[in-house]
Image (cartoon, rainbow, N blue to C red):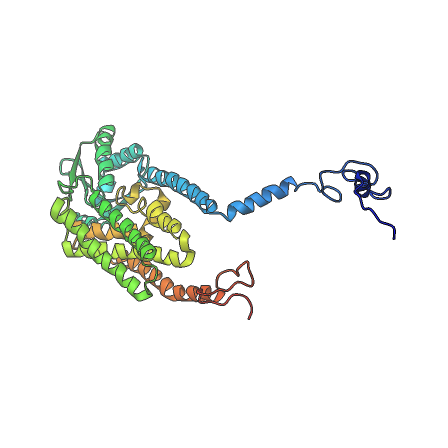
Amino acid sequence: MSEHHEHNDPGSSADSDRPSPGSPRSGTSRSGTPRSGTSHGPSRSGPSRSGFWRSRWQAFTGSPFFPASVLVLIVAAGAGLFAASYTYAMADPTPHDIPTAVVGRAQDERQARDFVTAMEKGLGSSLKLHRYGTYAEAEEAVDEQKVFAVLRVGAEGDVVMDLSGAAGASVAEVLRSAAPKAGKAAGVEVTVRDLKPLGRGDPRGLTIFYITLAADIIGFIGAIQLHANVPGLARWPRLAVIAAYSLLGGFVIAAMVGWLLRAVHLPFVHSWAILSLTMFTAGMVFTMFNTLFGRWAMIPTWFLLVLLGNPSSGGAVSWPLLPSLLGTVGRWLPPGASVNAQHTAVYFPGNVHVWPYLVLSAWALAGMTVFLTLDERLRGQSAAEGPPAAADSGGSQEGTGRREGPG
């Protein structure tokens, strides 16, 4: 038997690793063109520019930075609108048809006609004249807040203008400033008096505006905090809590201003009731919008009560000096109704009007109705729909209380 010797030939190893003539070599294609690395097949081009930005936008909208960015824009816009609304309404009050009583035939007297013409020219507006047979009737119209001044001709031919600072401090200030100039222009002697002056602690009549502002803002902020900190509270207990902090908050506001600071002599129980109703109404306005719009409820609440409601309330600037639209709209909103009710209770207690209370009650009832009717229904729909299905279809959904997907 011949002996077979096995040995390793260096050339044989290299030959075995050498590619056959028909096979493509590493790094080159069959045609001889160089290959990129070790990838197989033709190279693919990267994503298009539009696709890149679309994917980046989708990633951004799905991140917490998207709602944060929206919030930045909303807060910035709110700051500008807040400054603009108050500046537009109150920075430069302009008279618009100030209701004025004329006693007897004073309107037919030359002195009165010349004075009224000069007043309207000086104010850049007209006086809306209402004729009354006697001075007592004109005074009653002042008490009912139908007119802001009484115009009559004195025994010596002079013109007497009786103002009502309590009816509207800003209107009285405008008339008091314009009357002497108008009398001089008309060649008529003018006497200006104040039938119902404001108290020493509130010479500009702003206290009622401030306490209404406090009741409005704290009223809906309380509802916001209640929703954020006690989200599981049932519907009727939630309404009870809003009513409770409204009663207590109204009491504290009235006690602080009336008893401690003594800025205005408040009819305590009456003012307390108005402030509490105002706070409850503001809380129900937010609760209504929260039921309808969820986390964005602050936007319509702030717009209705702060941006639009407070400047048009007539508390800081009386409605004859507001832009016409604001003067009309303000009486239908909670802040304007509250200022009107409080103003009458403090300065004209014998002439209470029911309209402001109807406005406040209507807003409160509307908020309660929306909350009680839709809140449970919307929660039921949310529970029925459930959260989005998990990415891992085989994953369990234990602890959610809902089944995900079919079956």
